[in-house]
Length: 362
Length: 136
Image (cartoon, rainbow over all chains, first blue to last red; front, side, top):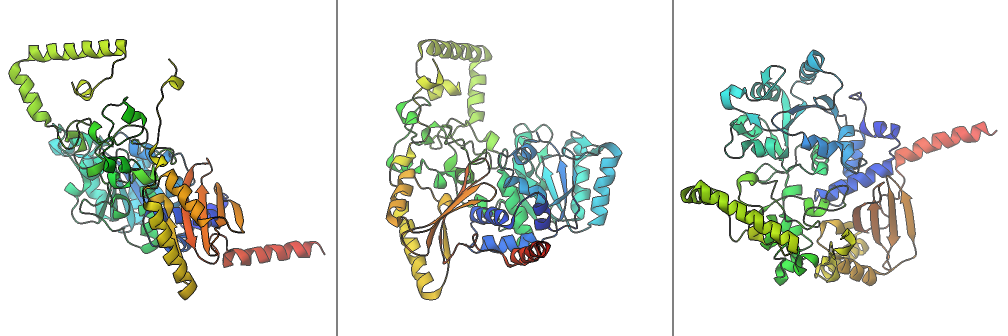
């Protein structure tokens, strides 16, 4: 938690980050945000002298994967700059303080920066039993969110859980989990979905807020258009194979080896808006489709309940119907089918036969 | 059986021209005309386009190599080179792990990244002044 009065570039210079290094970062960031060409330079000028805003980061029903995604990103010189752009006054995972000291830090930050601080929320909010399913410091997440949101200038819902409810909201949603925007209606909210979200999107939103004094343009689901404006499919390097009708039929056939389109293996790229295809993961090393697996659609609402990850979009799965069908036939038959499939998979493995999609779905 | 026995090609989308390279060439040509006529700079983000390695190779060959090539060590290595067409610069940025973070074609007199900022020049002037005085 650094001195919030310091300007950014002076702070970076202390860490050996030169103006040119910073400009390189801003150029890359502006490019990722699809801003006009001159914006990189303008952004560097603005951020160099920007005062870092107070940020309060709350953890609710989540796995902390979003924090991990950002703090353990492979390229700290880019994504790690998020922590130089802000004065992180409260973050339960990262802060040294604990217990009453931590709660005092929260309330001090809220009081000192009333109406000006940014609130980042990670995780969905349990509403069942008046929020009793998830509590911190003896208070429900629901109460904490309502209290802290009151004095916030804007809220950033980071990850699919905070944005849309995510996995805690998946059927049967035992805690009545909800997103931030389901509860808070009177504040500007930016959703940065993804499971986890792409680290540089967080940096981009912060940089936009500090450079232009406003939040970036959002789509109808509250996501920054710069990063979620196009589908995975539109930016996929395998798109050319889709257009040519060349598809992998299994994960180990000739098409898979040749890097053909994964559409028939259930890739959700055509209906998923995210920037994985251009920003990639692990410092730009690769991303799921490049690693040979279709997109799961994790930045879309209710992706966990959208059917099998291995059903092609042209034949959408209906898990509820399948489940009732199995129930009608009888539990004993279901168990028998399961055992038979397991035996078939075992036999296929022993004989090194090709495992088919239906095998994966049984 | 070892991993080397599995003949998986991680990415083979790069072997074919997608048609995007010729579109980029046309865009760069329009930008260079704007620079020549009105002094307007422009930039194309190659990382933001679905270009195969064949596309990159085609574009590299068409634009050719000019007289200037610069290496920068700024938060990881960067290379800037002028193509055979004056005012058309090809920039490649890597992070400190050596991973490609950005690739641009900048159409301008001198890439902005190369110019020294006035604040840095003023600070340098003061420091050099001290150094010169110390030597007297």
